[in-house]
Amino acid sequence: MSAPDVLVIGAGITGAVAALELAEMGARVEVVDRYGPAAMASGWTLAGVRQSGRHPAELPLARAAVARWQELDHRLEAKTHYRQEGNLRLARSEAEVETIKALVADQKKAGLDISFLADNSAVRAMVPALSASVLAASWCPTDGHADPVATVNAYLRLAERKGARISTGEIVQRLVVDGANVSGAVTQNREISAGAVLAAPGILVNRLLEPLGHAVPLQHPLVTVLRSAACEPMVAPVLGVANANMAVRQEAGGQLRATSGADVWQGRLDELDGKPVARTSMGKIRETISRISQVLPAFADAEIESVWGGVLDLTPDALPVIDSVPGFDNLVVAAGFSGHGFGIGPISGLLAAQLVLKRRPELDVSAFRFGRFSNLSSKEQAALTLHG
Image 1: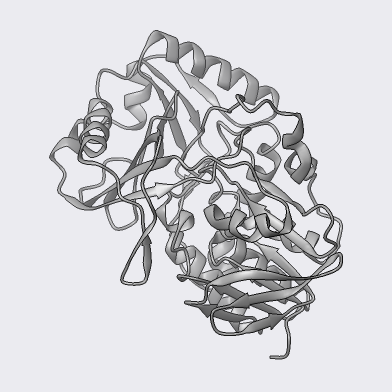
Image 2 (image 1 turned 180 degrees about the vertical axis):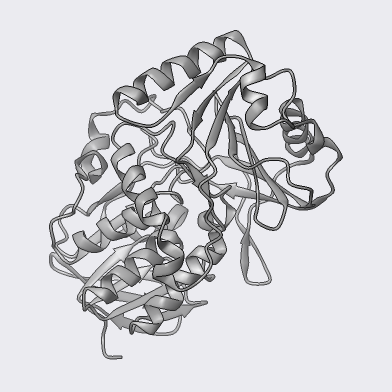
């Protein structure tokens, strides 16, 4: 392939989706990633595919993405293990009951199919394995979950069949600037010329932007993720809670995948066998097991298969940036998904692809503009809404 029309930096869900969409629009595409498919946030995630609990600006993206998820296996000719089995957001205290009631009322007004389950009996009728400590919940039957690594790989394989080039193990060291254009990128191996660049490298985005005089204001909290050995079926929907400090789902193979809330992280990103590693602590592991076991008692006795940390690219308003970089005609950023970008990937990647080809995005992306943070106080920080 000659020089790509678009260089996509990052092989997570956003970059993978964008690569396929761009290839199908007739563009020559190359994807470059320093690690490999879904090696960071897209693989670390719980992998919920939800509309419930979304910010109003993100809800149209989530609804459009869910429509795509339902036919994704057919489109990609591969298994994503997507299952539309709903989302229960649990209330464990009277204060959380009021939070859930307000969430249901607001999202019903926005047209979402969501209902309030007012007592423990109603909630346990959905998931009998839950404990008596759950007082109430919201129920969104059109939410679901999928396998993040299988999904990203399926997108990339089809993009390849459509002519995209996928290059992994290459570190993009810097972007090459020519006036108001980015003409390509330099890796440790070569210089890549490109007509346009889509930067979707997750937590590493500012390493590319800062030399250009820009940055997305990000915090990098850590989520502890636990994965059990295969268990008997016990949880069909994704389980979340009112304050987003835990979530759990059961994978297609029976493993329980559970996440903590987001904690301040002062560690470093290491590498092991060519993959990025963010380490959590024994205290956070114990805390996560305890918190989940309070609502799902069987979790306390599950065998733990693996543990990892997931680093978030958290913006001040917990919404992503999907926009051109000011001053550069052909550089688009899609980053800052704040721990809930996987579920909207099939649509956010499309929107980024449309922007980089200077086409009108099919959904409103004004809430995700690059320059919106100039009006925010440095102390402002949105609450997280994890899983998906």
